[in-house]
Image (cartoon, rainbow, N blue to C red; front, top):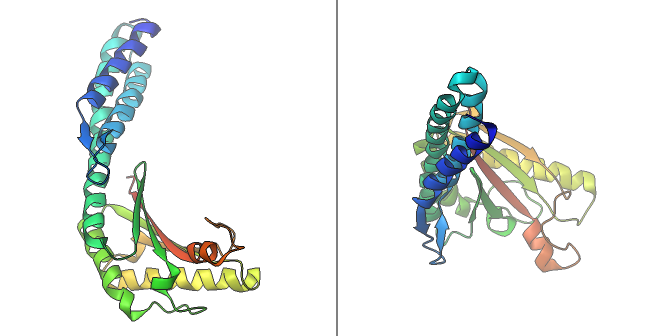
Length: 222
């Protein structure tokens, strides 16, 4: 099979997978391609390239098709797994003040500082325990997910103090999750201090957004 035909075949495989996986976003009502479909399409193209590369010249067309099928299945599997986890988290965290954002196969939970910690303190508020319990409940069900807990601060105070505070806050959230019977090997923590603002620190509204803990959930790669 010529290079041109292989590329056409791979494009057709990906297009077929994506065309059949349109869904309605329950929050906006808009039609969208699910992350499962995206994962399947990317996996199909990747698998096709690998399949063609490892096959002999006479069998490259067959290798590309087999590789596309296997790669598409793997990609769709990860996407479907994260789709289900995202849906569970949105359900559990509704009304909690924690936002759920999807970025490819990653899920990001943004926990504002005002609901998580008292000012300049690093101990998790007891009122926030039920929210973390809900997160832990989902993570225990989806046990093929790694969790990175990242602490962030505003720019009030010294950079050194803010760095240390962000590290302690992230560590305490991570410790609480582990205390809910999550494997410590799945959970890591890091502090970024004031280095990664998401809003303008000149204004209180912006500083309030910057004081946060973010949990990034990623599928394990075996």
